[in-house]
Amino acid sequence: MKRLSIFYILILFSAICYSQNNVQTLPAKSGGKYVGEVSNNIPNGKGIMYYANGNKEYEGMFKDGQFHGTGTSYFENGKLEYAGQWKEGYMDGYGEAYWENGFKCYEGTFKDGYFEGVGTSYREEDGTKIYTGQWIEDSPEGQGTYYYPDGKVEYTGQVMDDQPNGPGTSYYKSGSIEYTGTFSNGYRLDGHGTEYFDGGGKMYEGDFVNGIWEGQGVWYYQNGNIRAKGDFSKDLPCGQVVRYYENGVKKFEGTVALFTDEEGKTVSSAQGYGVWYDENGKLIYKGNFKAGKFDGQGTSYKEDGVTIEHQGQWKNGDFIGK
Image (cartoon, rainbow, N blue to C red; front, side):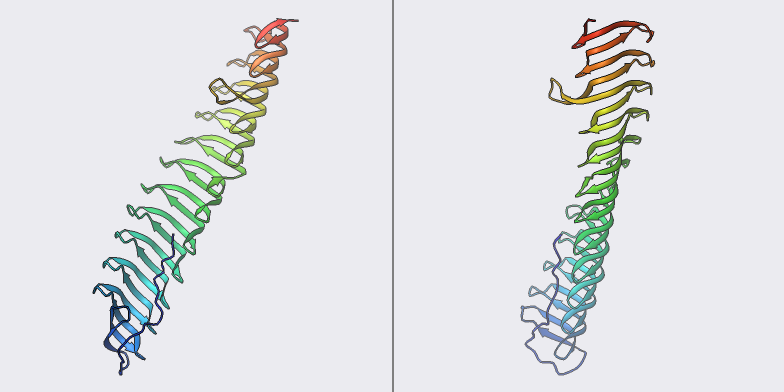
């Protein structure tokens, strides 16, 4: 957000004043006028500055011709611009700034005309809250919270350069937690984190790289049971992995790799040595796989999970003999 450059240097007046701290009306070089207390021929004390069109520009305290102390400034159209504390012509201390359409822009502390300290910003189009927390020179910086237009929390945690940076938690529009961990430039960062389903329950817990599942992790079903655990890459199991059925029974244990399917989607399938079980935990096959199919040396079993059905060489899912 741009700095609100509402400041004034010593004002030049064409009139000469002969009394101290008495109310005077002074024409300003800008075409407007000042009405208020005067000392040393310039505004000092309480007064009102007017635009050339007659609307108020500022009402409040002056010191040596500058806005200083408690005061209120206005846009040229007469609408409220800022109300609060001033120092040597700059907004400084606690105050409230407004968009020209009348909606509040910011409320909180200022320093040298900047949003600085702790404050809350609002959207110009509808006045809804954007962010509340710490600021440095008009930029959210430090601990803070961002909001969706409906007022629900979008993110809370560390902020830098007006983006999530550091430890924090993001939320779905529903209000449930989306992710908790570390962020960088608005995105989930390298490191450990937890992603959740919309509505609750872990989706994934483990390592992230550039916001995607990469490294060691655990993937969950919505019912809370583990779906897969082990190595991950590009948001999918890849490497040494254990997979499970939704009922919690082990489905597969071995190595998997990433492939592109007929629809152009990236999928994770068994590749290399592995062991496959049915939903009751009985052994179906153990041996080598290629792109998810039995391929190479392997052994298949009958429904009892004990009796060998075929043992030998397989090709593209078919048994071709010993």
